[in-house]
Image 1 (cartoon, helix red, strand yellow):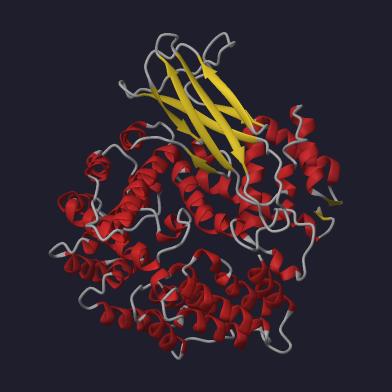
Image 2 (cartoon, rainbow, N blue to C red):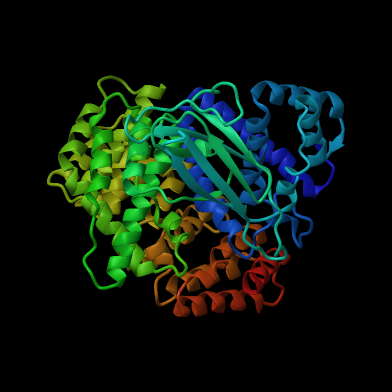
Length: 570
């Protein structure tokens, strides 16, 4: 099979990404794999959906086809396939795949052909669902709840709205699967789920379907006030708004039976604390760290029955990029200062537990790649990072010893990375040693460049400029270029968004130099300037200046023209 035209690209790429995700989930921890996928989606594709370059997974027009290879087409496209899988179930999805190949082997096909096969194999109507292919933006779900203790009923009112995007102001309701459960607030147990009108409970987890702007679901025989566990396994690519308290989020973080929902409760609890700290800093007050967050993290560290791979994910704070999406105006200095302060508090406040976790998960034998060993390394290296960030005595010695003694790249690079992030004693010596040891391995050298591109401080721009003059750096290798410039622009908030605009000028220089030789890479790099409206007036002016500077170039490629012009107009 092939695609009938370029507009059907997500048919191939979305299905490929979903297939790879399912394979990886079967090979390792499905819950941890799903968490990683969602974190990447939120920090990348959601940003694309909220900016001037937002487009449906099946766009209806383009200027340059090279700009078609986006996270929306790939990653959101995979989420759309996953929703079909969720709505009809694994058995029907397999029948749909078999029918799809039986009908279209050797043909040039469309997204409609694929969905029609799924509809025919399952007996489901996907008319409303097809809006996912034509409508841009990330839907926002709002959930209101009500418990009637006397009637023993619990009601969820779910509404959806998709914000306007360039060229699409009015949005229609989408077909959304909302996987959910209920956790007893007193007992902490998963409650059986029976909607009013049903004869018996269907278990402790189920999928609600929302096709209209709003719908109300009422559960019967709920004998204690519950806490809703919503969007389990991230059943739809949406932003979820709810009024769960910190105590309720702590309960879900401790007790939820769904790995993603449990992790997300911890992330939401962390975000509430982070926003409170940021508001305090902006108001000239001390930044408080809610003890409930540290207590919840301590409980995870103390529970030796938890999968270490999950614990490592659960104990990692939300990124600056993810928090910035919740801010009307991104306060770069405040956000970075708050994030650093919270990481110090988490590292120092749980120092003894981090050290015990580090020691407990040290390797006891030769290096292996089984799931248990991978999880142990993940938690051990998370603990090492927190010890270093907390300024705990002896942490730098631990990192240097791990670097010297490691028998695998994961542990050696983690020791180097974590030491570099805090500028620990000897990190520059280890950087030189690492390069000399691995200079003949291009992929490892890319990691070496990328590591330094993420080191956030006031000297980040100058560090990147020095690395651009390094003998191992070249503009002729796209992967080498991305490992330094794209990582700097996408993952170094403090450096790239420096108030004097030096980070933006560096990117503008690179784009102009690269455009004639490799316009595809140039245009992708330029996308980092697209969200200029979300920053303060000074940064807005600096980012616009670089976009206008690129547009003014004689002979500018259509690739870069499309990104720059849409970024300014969107």
